[in-house]
Structures are given as C-alpha cells and as structure tokens.
Image (tube, rainbow, N blue to C red; front, side):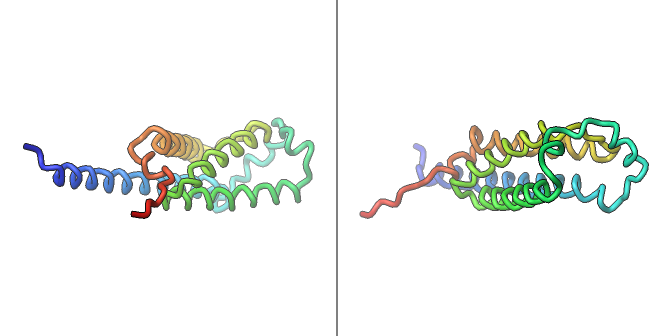
Amino acid sequence: MTNFNDVDKNLFERMKIYKLWFRRLIVLAILFSTLQYSIPIIFNFEQYYGLRRFVDQGLITFFLDNEIQLIIAFSIIIFSIISFLMIYLFKPIGKIFYTINLVITLLINMFSGDIIEYGILYPLDWLTKISEGLILYLMYFGEVKREFILQKKVNE
C-alpha cells in the first residue's frame, strides 16, 4: 500500500530540485547577458569601428536621436533586471514581465540595424538566447509553471 506522505515528500523534493535548477538557469542567463555586453567595453575592438559606417544603422538610429536611444536602453535594462528578479522569486507577474521584456528586446533588435559580431560574442549571444528560450519554456510548459500560478488563500 502506498503511503501518501511519502509521495508528497518525493514530489516536494523534486520541486525543490526543479526550482534550484531554474534559478541556476536564470543566474546563467544573467551572466551570459552581462558578459555579452561588457566584453566589448572591456576589450576595445577598435579595428571594427570603421566597418560600422558601412552597415545598415536601422530605423531606430534613423528616427531617434542618441539621448532618446540612451533613455530607451536604460529603461530596458531596468525592466530586464526587474523581470529577472521577479521570476527568480517565482512571482506570477514576473512571468508576464519576462515575456514582455523578451518581446520588446526582439522588436528593438529587429529595427536596430545590422550588428557586427565579434568572435567571442557570437557564442555568448547564442548561449544567452538559448538560456532565455529555455527559461521561457520552463515557465510556461515545465515543472516550475506551478510556481507561477497565483494562489488564493482560503480561510478555514
């Protein structure tokens, strides 16, 4: 005969493992994203700057001036930090924030023109996008999707 307390304990232990791996994936995605944007600042890739004037600058550069682009970039960074923090803490609104953040980032990338990829940054960009996609999949279809459901408190 099956003891239901053992089944609940095994389920609880499995969920703890899933939550731990999900949080590690979030930290990994943040690390990849930070490296992707900080490596060009740390290592000055000067030989590629001359090529930038020959590639398509995109609609965002054409229609918006530099100050507005900077404001948009900082607001996206702040929104990204908030969304990563919310999904790290398994807040139900974090799932919506993270999805909106990915859609806005995708739209900005679509209209920002051509990008010159440096040797080390191409694999980092690839790993960042894969980890972001895996986070999105796990939030909506994985085992941790139960953690993002808004639970009502029942008074007994």
